Length: 132
Image 1 (cartoon, one colour):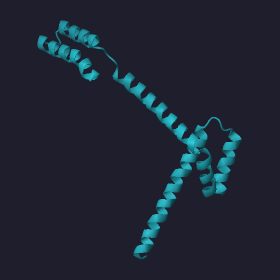
Image 2: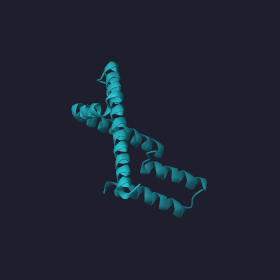
Image 3: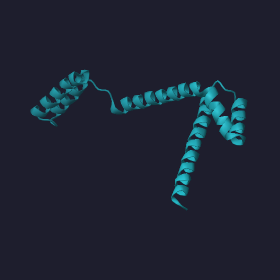
Image 4: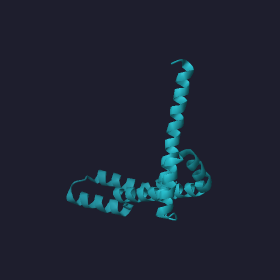
């Protein structure tokens, strides 16, 4: 295989990988779209199998704008779910809660007075840092 044959081989591998990405994006969009009936989804899949390049081109032209909106909506939904999980896992505690816990530890003898004051100063300073 000469140099240009190798370049052509890499080019066709790239084209094939790009086609697979488009194909999987179309299939994911088909199953994400609730406005399309099951029969119409089956017809799109059949055409994607038997006339793949033309069907992919027609799908992207006819339904490309809706495809973008559905992908964006799915990404926003996933982001909101992730943010909700992070908030739940991190536990939202106010400065008052932290100071109360530190005070109970101080009263139990688990903290020294200087450690309590450091925790109290940090808890009171955090909201000011977050407002910036």
